[in-house]
Image 1: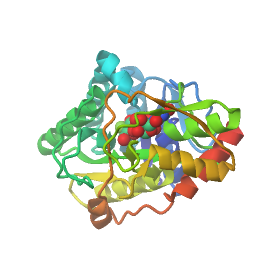
Image 2: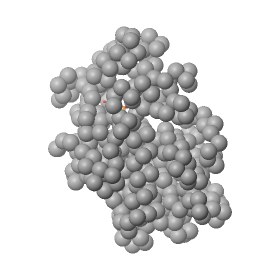
Image 3: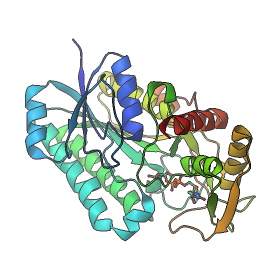
Image 4: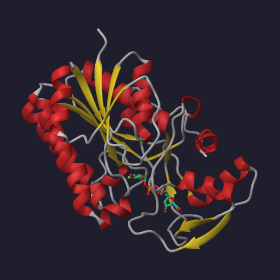
Length: 324
Ligand code: UFG
């Protein structure tokens, strides 16, 4: 029988790519999304319910009318800097509403959960690359939100046997332009779309911070293609179905690129110069974040396949050209 997966935040960036892949593999998809970015989503391969994922009545209706196998939860506020300015909103949306969702799952005896966590739970690295045993000392409310939910999940697993996989994403990037999927944040704050738009519109791209403890003095991040992240969700669900366990996995490539390297690579791909301005560092940005993903490789059989910088930038460029 076809299994049904509920995907809060399934019309967002990472959620939509995952939802697409899941339905390709034969799952029935119900997306619950408030469309906070006013994003376009004209796909007929999922049932789309436009509502807040904490709307109790809607949740009750979904769980009553459908035999939900698992929940993959993407609906979250994601911008680290915003979380420092508006912690109340972030705790409300990312923690309280997520706990409500878990409680409704328990009520309907749905006990498989895949959670979108983040490398922001680690805070300032004391050892690189980061593995899952690295101490967690988040420095932003956003990182704390994700860690609090991970603690709750651990307790819910122990007490109620609600099984989970928490996936700690490093920097999601790239797109599936031919399927009509890509990044549509509003406002956009992520480096790759901002670089590509600056090149296209001959506008200035601001480099945040040029005094970091890295070879070229700009921040280094581990960019992972969104399709690789989607693939990890498929494997995470299999893990939940095939074991009685819960677990936490990093999703990154093990290789980092600096902001300057990203700028140079984008110029090559676009065959155009980019105007840059060196600006102050952004609050909360650490020097280097790079993943050790061995645990996901050993337990899920997951490895990044689409995350070469060329593929990330090419697919993001094609997507930018489509939406403009
Ligand atoms: N950057 C610039 N100029 C810009 C935008 C970004 O120099 O205009 C730099 C940032 O300072 C940082 C790097 O590019 O060094 C990446 O920044 P992004 O804004 O693209 O991504 P973040 O690392 O801030 O955040 C993203 C997600 C978070 C997640 C994090 C994991 O939005 O939710 O990746 O590292 F926690």
